[in-house]
Image (cartoon, rainbow, N blue to C red):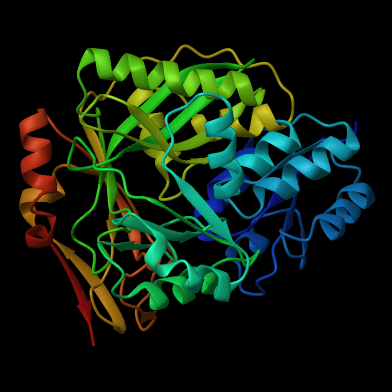
Length: 399
């Protein structure tokens, strides 16, 4: 009997869990990645040195392997490719048009405005000179960012026009499409945004993994430093956030799978959808949410990509849970990480990316993380008290 084949776009350290899960489920795993040193190639059944953003090249791999499903687990750049290939071959997928909108911030802002969602004023640019010419035409503060990046790469908040030129160049440097967007900066009612993952089944959200985005311990305060569950919102605010997200899912025609979300509320109670990624969240968010809800979200993601029916009953089993991104505030040579006794008892899982002697870079974007730790707490107070003091409990040892 022929094994069903799944094409997995990306073989990074964070994507190995999806490859291992697919193999455990009995699927033949085919991985594409453009990096010659990706660790996933040593876990999968077959590997192709192909860029996950090259739609036609990946389509040829899919045809040659006669694959049954495609997944871009925890990868924004590969998500449009996965949808494109699956749609071309008549395989399970969310609509390519919807995925394309979500992966391009200018298209997403246009979608929000056209469909009656609260949305900041925004303008996109494909030419550096055009962007620079608008320097004095904005109502500051604004936020400048690439239309197609994640993990806060290439993002700058400008309180006034000082530093505008550098922000434009910085944003363009991280855009694969060479397109950036400038938008009005929204004043958040709370000190953190709301983020995490939702999971969709048959067009309905069945898991609400909404959490407070933890930032502040990084050299770049825009870089995600972790997620804290549950999110601190009133019942009314939480319901409004859920209604807004489900409305977006319905209007886009999303069918199934994990979706990474970031949103915020202003002082007037309006819900702004900041970034929505049509894939599982980075920093191993699905691992955290799986522990919280007592289900296997990685497995659910793989099964959804293969068009399988899901029979799950999520319920909260860890009421106070967080993850924290291990990082360094300077460059150096990695010698290890020391955890204080006060926090060691809260940690239930560690995922360390570095080995002794590896090069470490200053944590100014999400790609420079050293690993992730997952923590459980007995109360909300304990959780926030300890998360706010993580720098006191963790020491990164560098030469």
